[in-house]
Image (cartoon, rainbow, N blue to C red):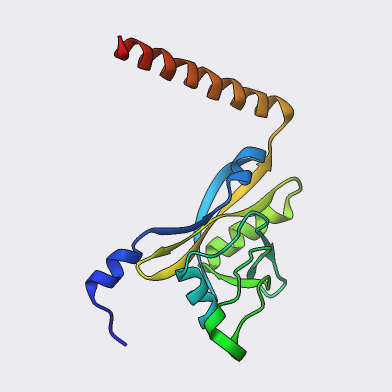
Length: 163
């Protein structure tokens, strides 16, 4: 079935789900964009904007593949018997060089690769994954101080503009 350009422009860069917890609890040092192996009902459900990536993480398999765990894509109501399991592991599609690099990071202790967001790019579902290192208590406090100082600056600027 051919698509016209108008349909593809609607899907361009459309965000489906984000993981704000990842940026709060972890320092993201590196990011990758990966494709996912999905069933038809999963794609339909994603097009409706339904997914949860808050618990999403990546595991390396011995066969040299990366698998995405903990991402929930709800069942598509109109799929009847051909529906998918909501919380099944999904294989990630990356270049071999990227898979080796991510697997090396996973082998090192104290690091994890988390799902950051799911989105459509050129009509294809993509997941953004990131190398995460846990933030210390001091790092979180520094982030809170920075946010608070930014708020104060923006309040002061708004007060000065209004008169």
